[in-house]
Image: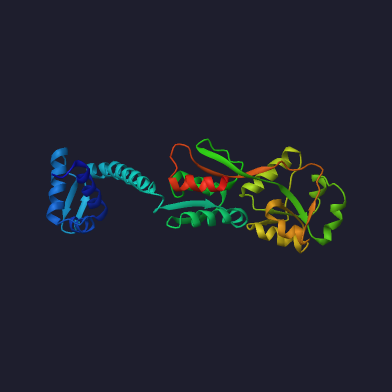
Length: 293
């Protein structure tokens, strides 16, 4: 005898396919068996769920309402079954990580390599975007975890700081005289400034700090690429606000020079975030462990 859950699985597939015959193919059942299952469910619920036409089937109003609940419930069951499978030594599965281009290039790659070497059968899907968009992707379920620039103000997310970073200002040869003494933020605003675009979390953090000190900025260049900040400073287009830990090569090779400001911008963190109310997959848990090693 077919179970109630199986009836709902048939119902969901018919709803998705819009056809008894197509649903039968997807479920590896005969078409009469699919038709009988739908009739049984309709009898048990005492309501018609589908309109039968020559071109296939369409939902009745009641069927359409029921489908939303059934689809959500079965999706949750399938997610639970998938999590159980993951416990088999992480031999299968997928880990979806959201990250910005800069953090991916200068911070995340070694951890991705370690995870892949340890769990080669886990597929890694990397989605690049801004911090704001990544937080949205977490909530929609498009990614499991995000590696972002902090701070993030969102009570629905669990935040795990992983590394400290320091925002600094750098210049090229033309402005090298600035490094001989401490410079105020007021003095910097009189020079051509190079910042990331306004939507970036890094820009918001630094600009917010400077405003708190009574200093407003009006950058001459607003860029969408972190690497361009360094390149623009290198060719003497102005003073760039960059992350010290991600600028080591340019600083060590004297392509750019760090400007010593009177007051340092407070350090902040790079970290992982995920939804508080949704349990992490085993793959995500293992990845976070590797990041903390």
